[in-house]
Image 1 (cartoon, rainbow, N blue to C red):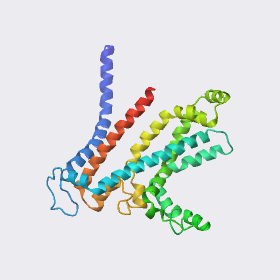
Image 2 (cartoon, rainbow, N blue to C red):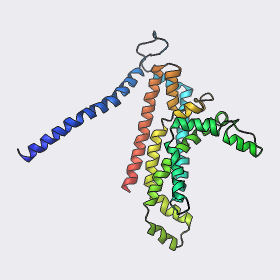
Image 3 (cartoon, rainbow, N blue to C red):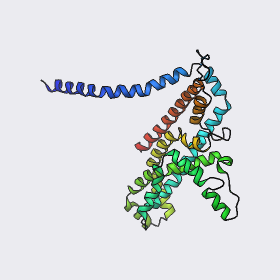
Image 4 (cartoon, one colour):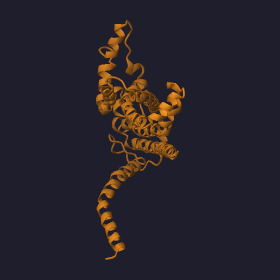
Length: 294
């Protein structure tokens, strides 16, 4: 048997072994997408079996003219932008801080990374009942101790509170990636800049931040993909309220499907979310590719 024949036989054997996994992955991803697309053009209500048939673009027309959709879309963008600003900004500062030598640095690194391993539902419950409760929460006790009136954070500042909880969850991820990037920076370069008279701010601005550009772009891309689908924190803390003040696109789709039982409208919302997520992903992937080419 020639070498080419043996190579072709090995390739066919490898393809045969990979085919089941590829087929399962395709079914797993494509079938739900096709079903969502199908139901988005149907009249399908879980509490009214008589309402059925082809709806055309009525579900999409209702979705795009619904004020709640616009509000949820704005809330989604605000949530993503706010969490990214906090996690990347504070994460960069903490990464630089934890790169320095100080007593207890190992313990400090473990503590700052620990929140990332807390499940979103548990984190939301801890913040809602232990930290932010207006009567017996830790923050309320601290405010009463200094003579201030406790604040009902989830009622008065629902979106900002959800943003704070999610940022607390994702800050460790940012610190972990950026700290690794900071540690890869050549110490001789920083030492040379220090000997040339560059102060801490100048070294941070002209050496550390440019070095972290690629890592920051990767953090933004990964976090954005996950932040577009934030659900548990909103469901546990505010349930999208008051009204729709803290409703994002993911929670709106859930509310349409399982609270209002409108599967057709929820499917239309799901397709809109897929389109938005893919548009964002294209820009993020191009940004990462540009940074990798530099």
